[in-house]
Length: 152
Image 1 (cartoon, one colour):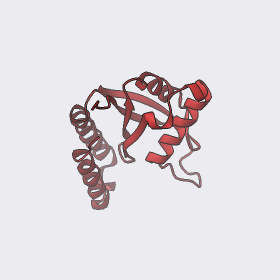
Image 2: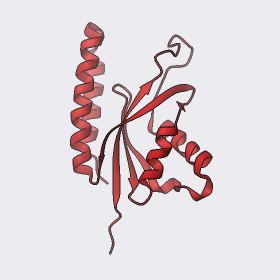
Image 3: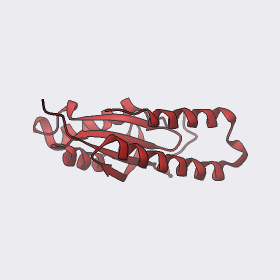
């Protein structure tokens, strides 16, 4: 039996700082929103010959630190990565993606994501100061726990 070979991309999502945050709709980054944005760009740029919808999966998204993990098949990861760089908006919010780590297994990806997420949350805490409520800290702990139990 042959095991499927995957690549894991740890990505950072930068929201457009010029976006009017006082608008009526909040900026929410979810697994569904990211997958839809990537899928739309794949169809636009590669058409039906591009990577299939089953060749990538958004495994993890943290809306607090804007970090996400995307699993792609080894054969198609370069096309998925290229498509991710071409994503210009998620929903109605302009975004830019930054690749933080590319790994061949989930353990290395998990370690890199934990390190990045903890560092970004420390930055968030220092910038937000007293506005970081116990609820936000609990949410962040839940997201860190999600990373720790990630599997294929």
